Amino acid sequence: MDIAVIGTGYVGLVTGVCLSELGHQVTCIDIDERKVEMLENGKSPIYEDGLEELLVQNLQKGRVDFTTDYRKGLRNKQLVYLAVGTPQGDDGSADLTYIEAACRNIAENLENDTVIVTKSTVPVGTNEHIKETIEANLVHDVTINVASNPEFLRQGSAVHDTFHGDRIVIGSDDNEALVMLERVNEGFGLPIVKTDLRSAEMIKYASNAFLATKISFINEMANLSERIGANIDHVARGMGMDNRIGGSFLNAGIGYGGSCFPKDTRAIISIGKEADYDMPILENVVDANERQRVIIVEKLLTRFSSLNGKRVAVLGLAFKPNTDDMREAPSIEVTGKLIEAGAEVTAYDPVAADNAKTILPDQVRYAGSVEEALQHADIAIILTEWKEIKEFPLAGYRDRMNEAILFDGRNCFTLDEVRGSGVEYHSIGRPVVN
Ligand code: NAD
Image 1: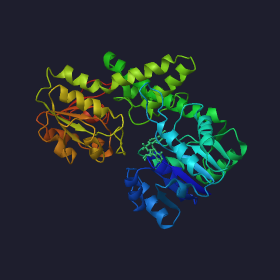
Image 2: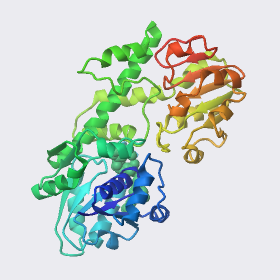
Image 3: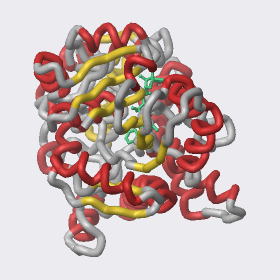
Image 4: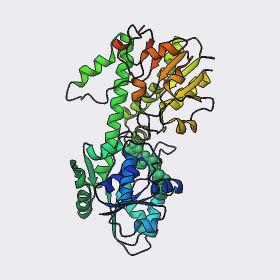
């Protein structure tokens, strides 16, 4: 099929490239000229495992191309995917500015009938609004339909998830649009959930809200375990073996971040407010996560009377491993608080350092490796569980640091691994070791 994808961020670029891999003819449109130029030259502006290889292959086969020109990009397309950002607005609701702008661009440039497919996470009812906005601004005499196809990929494994996800959700109030979307997605070979427009929009928010709840829940259990002498690893394992609970997403740590969970939980609370319905569970999930993010700094302040002049090595900055995304990363708040307390911070991240430099306090210094960050440090903190950080030997902390004291915000080591290592080890939901 002939497809246009609007927005070449984490979702749009992965969607466009993966659809072209299935054999569809895809044009990706973005307003960012620098991104489009990079993409035309086979360079991915974001870090995602396997993405650049697929991009290059499909560019060479002539199945994907990039443009900033809406008229050219929309020409003869049967489906137009919307994948622009929907960031958090000032009041917590989703900011639809980019969606509105893209709709107006579509309306002004669309010259043939098409189905608009929304991949962006948008409040319930937005697809109807998208249809009205485009129809009100159409320049040519064309017919449009709308469908919702929310995205469930995880940053860090986005390409893998697109081909091996648990399900694809498609929602529309128009049967023809549903049939078209089913055909487009057939090639992925994944179970397809067909539903109406509003239910599809709601599935996305409900799923993210549930996952965020699971994280805040296990963190609350971890904080209590710590106080009563239980070990959250054992607690989570024992809980997760119950199929009704499930073992995934039960890793205690310093809370969730990134471009989705924080904004989507706040957005669904805001959707509730508009519908005159309070959502106390989710309000507490959000509060609990905010507290959890800085718990590691509180642990430091309990252990040391002052952090003034202490050399702190921060390992991992991205909001999670395998991505360069720094949006709502706990490292932002943690490094800010450390600097405020007078600490000298040296940070290391395998891929997010360039993005971090534009966000973290100017006082943060950057190291080129774990080893370099640890050299002569008084305290080490793990904020992101990158494989190379998880696998860095404990002896390396002992050998390089002034005093081997590690605060692990992601529980990268088991207590058995740490016992007798000579490293004073603080983690989440488990007793202090050594
Ligand atoms: P992003 O910020 O990485 O990318 C958005 C892109 O849209 C940018 O390249 C921007 O230049 C472009 N853009 C903005 N306005 C435009 C316009 N008028 N025309 C053309 N291009 C325009 O965003 P993202 O992380 O890919 O998220 C996109 C949507 O998908 C959001 O609604 C998000 O909630 C949702 N989502 C994201 C993820 C994720 O893991 N990132 C997962 C599921 C769903």
